[in-house]
Image (tube, rainbow, N blue to C red; front, top):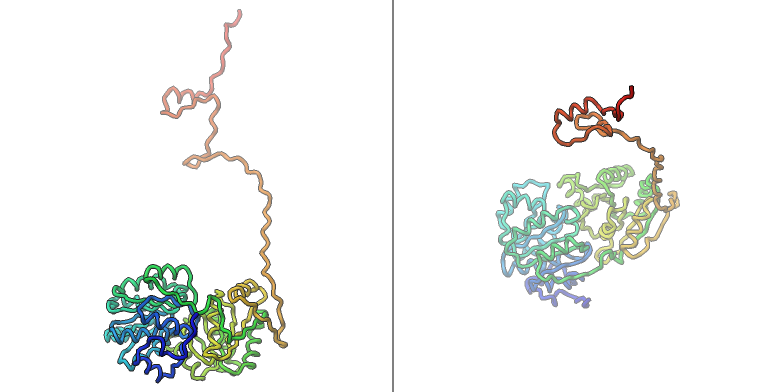
Length: 444
């Protein structure tokens, strides 16, 4: 990897854009920005592999705005969630304003009428989730004919959420595409296949290999009974006084944990797909402002949470996928600040723990709390196989014909004939087998 430059001046950025970055107090590029911006400004396709919180938005945002300001056209940014779309919009707004450019956010959960109005105003950048943009395309309320740049942000998450068909459908409408930039924390085969079909000799930029966790996050693991998790969480919230982000596997679990936290007098909000867009936005904004000290979220809803001052991340439940562990703990320890990640697991989840440890290439330090009973890790026992009774010898049964009547085995001497039933044959069958006559005559 090349040495990172101290400023943005050596990356090929225009003087006008440098002046904007200076006003925004952007002085030192992150590793992904250092490598991606010069390549993107040349118009080359990019496959960027980087974790959440590495500065990906500016890595594609700076070159996209500069290229559009010089050459016109539109850019399309596809993201997996509503929250991430709003986050990208807020991040790009200060770059667009000095150039008198604007963006439109096209997401579900809000009325479509306002979005149609925004699209008619011909925004320079369209930031959209695949589902809602596909709806607009089907209703012919949007045209992508002027889109020159396509950016796929967090592509792995889009595919995990089942948006692959919509993404492929949307790309068919982009007929004048000049450049594609794809950013993902992982690069599974489905994404590589998409890149091969829609990208021209892309330059691969890998900042951190899959499973790499930030060095600024300390990690520890508590193995406890599931019934002890809530008590342990309450003790941890008293120990850590800063902002806390808690992850659960399900929506119902998120609501339950939030209620229990509020009962002990701690301000908390929840964010998951059962909450409306306005409720999710209010919860996230309240968390950023400090109105809520704790935010409880599911994995899908947490995409787009960009809060730099999160002190602690708690995995109340283990994630379904080991790679989500990396995404989760990447929410803390940002911008050079130290963070902490605590995972709660039950004794039967040893295999899941090992998958995580194998991915991040380290053993999670085990911890215990003096007030919580420690549980011993154990492999889940295999269910005993049912013992089958010895099979009885089946009795031979006569086969039934089409009418359901059992067929009688014909007598050995009965005439066999597969052809039509002639009168002679019928008479022979009716009479039965003939008796054998003695040879010779009777003596007098």
